Image: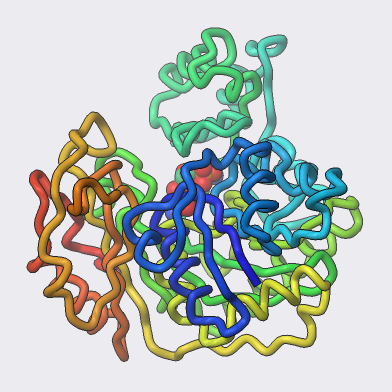
Length: 423
Ligand code: AMP
Ligand code: GLY
């Protein structure tokens, strides 16, 4: 079959790389894609939220399956758009419908879901411009640090963690009254700070059955030792060494099962990936967020470890036969290190030529913010390329990634040299 992937990052290059290995797939299309997907698929110059243009491409290229990378099209209802249209409703869409995508699109909705289904999470209350004073009063009952979350999608910037009570009050006002994050901060969730180490759990569901994929840990801060500004992710490791069988069992029983059951009970149609952000507090998993897609750069370490044919899995999701599939995982560790443009996550320059890719041995360079121009590969974003490697241990894998990075170059290239430092 012909498959269309929506998105343009390292995650989507990894999807294309994995799908290209399937005998079930004829042609792969990626909208809009990057220089990595261009090597193995056909890039289409279409925005991920331009549903009419996507429909046109689906008909023109006889696409039978659409795999949605980022959250925006899901939150805007791309799956529902397909189901409502006679011409394309036969096409399988991998990604939840709009009602379920709200788990990522609204923090308040996610917190209510967690509470309703008794899934462990931080205590919280939510506020809007009509009850800011109550928000101040709630902050006064909490101990620092204070966690403020814009309800809506804010490009990964909507969470503030503040040590000072007055600062927390000022920020709450600026979010609710001065629209600091635009409409996304019309509502704000204030929650208890959870002290522990983070990891992510990835679940596939067809709405009835589920399969758990390997865990991963990403490194979100720009600076070594997890310091400085938040980024989309600077590197990742899978599996997570501290996720013992006992702890994984707790995640499955206390979080995964009630989540999948909760989706059914609440009538939230879901065929796709559930990305559960967790914090290990003592020996207990607590949910900090749901995302309705795969993580980036977590995909770059999770999918390479998947031995099962991904297209077969996606077909089973579409046909609601996921229970018939065996998921086989490579026991080796995988790590990835993200090369970023100097200055990122603040202002940075684009258009820098990337060289040395032909010298990479025994690592996979997944392209992210990189495009082809005049026969060259040039940077086009903040996160440029994720260098993934395997090893018997994560230490061995990370060493390979760093050895290969030595061979790569672009002007003002930056990366973290301590991925895995805390494990
Ligand atoms: P989120 O967008 O909800 O994933 O939050 C972004 C980041 O903020 C998370 O990856 C955590 O590092 C941190 N965070 C979110 N909620 C909490 C919490 N309740 N306690 C501690 N850290 C949190
Ligand atoms: N790496 C975190 C995310 O994809 O949201």
